[in-house]
Image (cartoon, rainbow, N blue to C red; front, side):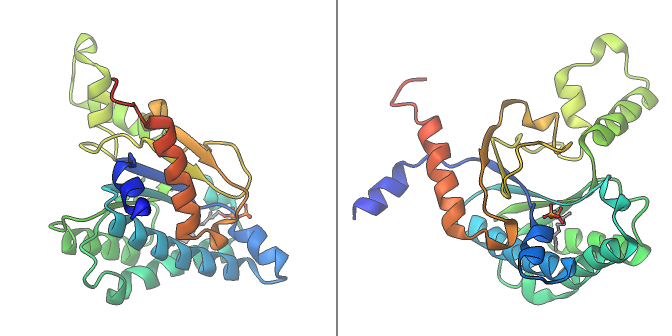
Amino acid sequence: MFLNKKKEERVLPQHIAIIMDGNGRWAKKRSLPRKAGHAAGSKTFKDIARYCNKIGIKYLTVYAFSTENWKRPKEEVDNIMNILRDYLKDTENFKGENIRLQFIGERGPLAEDIKELMLKAEDDSKNATGLHLNIALNYGGRDEIVHAVRDIVSRGVKAEDITEDTISENLYTSGQPDPDFIIRPSGEYRLSNYLIWQAAYAEYWFSDVLWPDFRPKHLEQALDEFSKRNRRFGGV
Ligand code: FPP
Protein backbone atom coordinates (compact mmCIF):
# COMPACT_ATOMS: atom_id res chain seq x y z
CA MET A 1 0.00 0.00 0.00
CA PHE A 2 2.64 2.46 1.14
CA LEU A 3 4.90 1.29 -1.64
CA ASN A 4 2.24 2.08 -4.26
CA LYS A 5 1.71 5.53 -2.87
CA LYS A 6 5.41 6.16 -2.88
CA LYS A 7 5.71 5.00 -6.49
CA GLU A 8 2.83 7.26 -7.58
CA GLU A 9 4.51 10.32 -6.14
CA ARG A 10 7.83 9.52 -7.71
CA VAL A 11 9.06 11.89 -10.41
CA LEU A 12 10.33 9.80 -13.31
CA PRO A 13 12.84 11.06 -15.84
CA GLN A 14 11.52 11.56 -19.35
CA HIS A 15 14.68 10.44 -21.02
CA ILE A 16 17.29 8.14 -19.49
CA ALA A 17 20.69 7.77 -21.14
CA ILE A 18 22.96 4.92 -20.10
CA ILE A 19 26.66 4.30 -20.72
CA MET A 20 26.82 0.49 -20.71
CA ASP A 21 30.30 0.21 -19.26
CA GLY A 22 32.27 -2.55 -17.55
CA ASN A 23 31.67 -5.57 -19.78
CA GLY A 24 35.39 -6.23 -20.18
CA ARG A 25 36.11 -6.02 -16.44
CA TRP A 26 33.14 -8.25 -15.67
CA ALA A 27 34.59 -10.93 -17.97
CA LYS A 28 38.12 -10.50 -16.63
CA LYS A 29 36.95 -11.01 -13.05
CA ARG A 30 35.58 -14.38 -14.16
CA SER A 31 38.60 -15.27 -16.33
CA LEU A 32 36.31 -15.22 -19.35
CA PRO A 33 37.02 -13.71 -22.79
CA ARG A 34 35.81 -10.13 -23.31
CA LYS A 35 33.11 -11.37 -25.65
CA ALA A 36 31.44 -13.15 -22.73
CA GLY A 37 31.23 -9.74 -21.04
CA HIS A 38 29.59 -8.20 -24.09
CA ALA A 39 27.14 -11.11 -24.34
CA ALA A 40 26.18 -10.64 -20.69
CA GLY A 41 25.98 -6.86 -21.23
CA SER A 42 23.63 -7.41 -24.14
CA LYS A 43 21.32 -9.49 -21.94
CA THR A 44 21.33 -6.70 -19.34
CA PHE A 45 20.54 -4.18 -22.08
CA LYS A 46 17.46 -6.18 -23.16
CA ASP A 47 16.24 -6.58 -19.58
CA ILE A 48 16.70 -2.90 -18.74
CA ALA A 49 15.03 -1.72 -21.96
CA ARG A 50 12.02 -3.96 -21.23
CA TYR A 51 11.93 -2.75 -17.66
CA CYS A 52 12.01 0.92 -18.69
CA ASN A 53 9.14 0.25 -21.07
CA LYS A 54 7.20 -1.51 -18.33
CA ILE A 55 7.46 1.35 -15.86
CA GLY A 56 6.55 3.99 -18.45
CA ILE A 57 9.86 5.64 -19.30
CA LYS A 58 9.37 7.45 -22.60
CA TYR A 59 12.93 7.60 -23.93
CA LEU A 60 16.01 5.47 -23.31
CA THR A 61 19.33 5.96 -25.09
CA VAL A 62 22.10 3.39 -24.70
CA TYR A 63 25.71 3.72 -25.78
CA ALA A 64 26.47 0.53 -27.72
CA PHE A 65 29.49 1.60 -29.80
CA SER A 66 31.37 4.87 -29.89
CA THR A 67 33.32 6.49 -32.72
CA GLU A 68 36.42 5.67 -30.63
CA ASN A 69 35.56 1.96 -30.25
CA TRP A 70 36.96 1.17 -33.73
CA LYS A 71 40.39 1.31 -32.05
CA ARG A 72 39.63 -1.98 -30.29
CA PRO A 73 40.96 -5.26 -31.74
CA LYS A 74 39.06 -6.26 -34.88
CA GLU A 75 37.87 -9.45 -33.20
CA GLU A 76 36.16 -7.44 -30.46
CA VAL A 77 34.60 -4.97 -32.91
CA ASP A 78 33.27 -7.90 -34.97
CA ASN A 79 31.93 -9.49 -31.82
CA ILE A 80 29.96 -6.40 -30.80
CA MET A 81 28.59 -6.05 -34.35
CA ASN A 82 27.54 -9.71 -34.30
CA ILE A 83 25.71 -9.19 -31.02
CA LEU A 84 23.85 -6.35 -32.66
CA ARG A 85 23.05 -8.46 -35.75
CA ASP A 86 21.66 -11.24 -33.56
CA TYR A 87 19.62 -8.77 -31.55
CA LEU A 88 18.06 -7.23 -34.65
CA LYS A 89 17.38 -10.58 -36.33
CA ASP A 90 15.70 -12.14 -33.33
CA THR A 91 12.07 -11.05 -33.59
CA GLU A 92 11.46 -12.45 -30.10
CA ASN A 93 13.26 -9.34 -28.83
CA PHE A 94 10.48 -7.11 -30.09
CA LYS A 95 7.37 -9.26 -30.00
CA GLY A 96 4.61 -7.63 -28.00
CA GLU A 97 6.96 -4.98 -26.63
CA ASN A 98 5.60 -1.89 -28.42
CA ILE A 99 9.12 -0.41 -28.37
CA ARG A 100 10.15 2.09 -31.03
CA LEU A 101 13.73 1.59 -32.09
CA GLN A 102 15.99 4.30 -33.49
CA PHE A 103 19.72 4.32 -34.14
CA ILE A 104 21.81 7.40 -33.58
CA GLY A 105 25.33 7.82 -34.92
CA GLU A 106 27.18 7.92 -38.23
CA ARG A 107 26.03 4.92 -40.28
CA GLY A 108 28.49 5.30 -43.18
CA PRO A 109 31.25 2.96 -41.95
CA LEU A 110 28.90 0.18 -40.77
CA ALA A 111 28.49 -3.09 -42.69
CA GLU A 112 25.75 -3.00 -45.35
CA ASP A 113 23.74 -5.86 -43.85
CA ILE A 114 23.73 -4.13 -40.45
CA LYS A 115 22.55 -0.88 -42.02
CA GLU A 116 19.69 -2.79 -43.67
CA LEU A 117 18.74 -4.51 -40.41
CA MET A 118 18.79 -1.14 -38.64
CA LEU A 119 16.50 0.45 -41.24
CA LYS A 120 14.13 -2.50 -41.10
CA ALA A 121 13.96 -2.45 -37.29
CA GLU A 122 13.28 1.29 -37.35
CA ASP A 123 10.61 0.92 -40.00
CA ASP A 124 8.94 -2.09 -38.36
CA SER A 125 8.69 -0.30 -35.02
CA LYS A 126 7.92 3.22 -36.22
CA ASN A 127 4.32 3.16 -34.98
CA ALA A 128 5.11 1.75 -31.54
CA THR A 129 3.79 3.98 -28.79
CA GLY A 130 5.77 2.61 -25.84
CA LEU A 131 9.41 3.24 -25.05
CA HIS A 132 11.43 5.12 -27.67
CA LEU A 133 14.74 3.28 -27.59
CA ASN A 134 17.77 4.95 -29.15
CA ILE A 135 20.83 2.78 -29.70
CA ALA A 136 23.95 4.89 -30.14
CA LEU A 137 26.11 3.11 -32.69
CA ASN A 138 29.27 4.62 -34.12
CA TYR A 139 28.18 7.61 -32.12
CA GLY A 140 30.30 10.50 -30.86
CA GLY A 141 28.93 13.71 -29.40
CA ARG A 142 31.43 16.00 -31.09
CA ASP A 143 31.02 14.16 -34.36
CA GLU A 144 27.25 14.65 -34.06
CA ILE A 145 27.67 18.41 -33.58
CA VAL A 146 30.05 18.64 -36.56
CA HIS A 147 27.47 16.86 -38.72
CA ALA A 148 24.73 19.17 -37.50
CA VAL A 149 26.78 22.30 -38.27
CA ARG A 150 27.66 20.99 -41.74
CA ASP A 151 23.99 20.32 -42.48
CA ILE A 152 22.97 23.77 -41.31
CA VAL A 153 25.70 25.50 -43.31
CA SER A 154 25.02 23.44 -46.43
CA ARG A 155 21.39 24.58 -46.38
CA GLY A 156 22.58 28.19 -46.43
CA VAL A 157 21.03 29.15 -43.08
CA LYS A 158 22.08 32.70 -42.19
CA ALA A 159 24.44 33.05 -39.21
CA GLU A 160 22.05 35.36 -37.35
CA ASP A 161 19.23 32.81 -37.73
CA ILE A 162 21.13 30.07 -35.90
CA THR A 163 19.82 29.45 -32.39
CA GLU A 164 20.25 26.67 -29.86
CA ASP A 165 17.09 25.13 -31.30
CA THR A 166 18.67 25.09 -34.76
CA ILE A 167 21.51 22.94 -33.39
CA SER A 168 19.14 20.66 -31.41
CA GLU A 169 16.91 20.14 -34.43
CA ASN A 170 19.87 18.97 -36.49
CA LEU A 171 21.17 16.38 -34.04
CA TYR A 172 20.31 12.68 -34.34
CA THR A 173 17.91 13.13 -31.42
CA SER A 174 15.93 15.86 -33.20
CA GLY A 175 12.39 16.11 -31.87
CA GLN A 176 13.16 14.19 -28.67
CA PRO A 177 13.39 15.70 -25.19
CA ASP A 178 16.97 16.01 -23.95
CA PRO A 179 18.05 13.27 -21.54
CA ASP A 180 17.30 14.42 -18.00
CA PHE A 181 19.03 11.47 -16.33
CA ILE A 182 22.38 9.96 -17.28
CA ILE A 183 23.49 6.69 -15.70
CA ARG A 184 27.02 5.38 -15.80
CA PRO A 185 27.83 2.15 -14.00
CA SER A 186 31.27 0.53 -13.51
CA GLY A 187 32.95 3.20 -11.40
CA GLU A 188 33.84 5.68 -14.14
CA TYR A 189 32.86 9.31 -13.76
CA ARG A 190 33.12 10.60 -17.29
CA LEU A 191 30.72 11.49 -20.08
CA SER A 192 33.02 10.02 -22.76
CA ASN A 193 31.69 12.16 -25.62
CA TYR A 194 28.14 10.91 -24.99
CA LEU A 195 25.26 13.25 -25.87
CA ILE A 196 27.42 16.20 -24.91
CA TRP A 197 25.02 18.82 -26.29
CA GLN A 198 21.86 17.13 -25.02
CA ALA A 199 23.30 16.46 -21.53
CA ALA A 200 23.63 20.15 -20.64
CA TYR A 201 20.99 20.07 -17.88
CA ALA A 202 20.88 16.35 -17.03
CA GLU A 203 21.21 14.80 -13.60
CA TYR A 204 23.93 12.14 -13.28
CA TRP A 205 24.01 8.88 -11.37
CA PHE A 206 27.11 6.75 -11.00
CA SER A 207 27.53 3.26 -9.58
CA ASP A 208 30.35 0.75 -9.10
CA VAL A 209 28.19 -2.09 -10.43
CA LEU A 210 29.55 -3.42 -13.72
CA TRP A 211 27.01 -3.25 -16.55
CA PRO A 212 26.43 -7.04 -16.88
CA ASP A 213 25.51 -7.08 -13.16
CA PHE A 214 23.17 -4.09 -13.48
CA ARG A 215 19.61 -5.11 -12.62
CA PRO A 216 16.23 -3.38 -12.44
CA LYS A 217 16.84 -2.98 -8.68
CA HIS A 218 19.85 -0.77 -9.46
CA LEU A 219 17.77 1.26 -11.86
CA GLU A 220 15.15 1.60 -9.13
CA GLN A 221 17.82 2.98 -6.75
CA ALA A 222 18.83 5.46 -9.41
CA LEU A 223 15.23 6.47 -10.07
CA ASP A 224 14.57 7.02 -6.37
CA GLU A 225 17.58 9.30 -6.26
CA PHE A 226 16.41 11.15 -9.37
CA SER A 227 13.01 11.64 -7.81
CA LYS A 228 14.53 12.98 -4.57
CA ARG A 229 16.57 15.50 -6.51
CA ASN A 230 13.56 16.61 -8.53
CA ARG A 231 10.81 16.70 -5.95
CA ARG A 232 9.46 20.19 -5.95
CA PHE A 233 7.22 20.02 -2.88
CA GLY A 234 4.53 21.95 -4.71
CA GLY A 235 6.86 24.77 -5.66
CA VAL A 236 8.24 25.58 -9.06
C1 FPP B 1 31.80 -0.93 -22.69
O1 FPP B 1 32.40 -1.88 -21.84
C2 FPP B 1 30.92 -1.62 -23.59
C3 FPP B 1 30.96 -1.56 -24.94
C4 FPP B 1 31.95 -0.76 -25.69
C5 FPP B 1 30.04 -2.34 -25.75
C6 FPP B 1 28.65 -2.30 -25.24
C7 FPP B 1 27.85 -3.21 -26.05
C8 FPP B 1 26.91 -4.03 -25.56
C9 FPP B 1 26.50 -4.10 -24.14
C10 FPP B 1 26.14 -4.85 -26.50
C11 FPP B 1 25.05 -3.98 -27.00
C12 FPP B 1 24.15 -4.74 -27.76
C13 FPP B 1 23.04 -4.24 -28.28
C14 FPP B 1 22.17 -5.18 -28.93
C15 FPP B 1 22.69 -2.81 -28.20
P1 FPP B 1 33.96 -2.12 -21.94
O2 FPP B 1 34.20 -3.20 -22.93
O3 FPP B 1 34.64 -0.83 -22.24
O4 FPP B 1 34.27 -2.61 -20.50
P2 FPP B 1 35.63 -2.37 -19.72
O5 FPP B 1 35.73 -0.88 -19.52
O6 FPP B 1 35.38 -3.09 -18.44
O7 FPP B 1 36.73 -2.96 -20.54
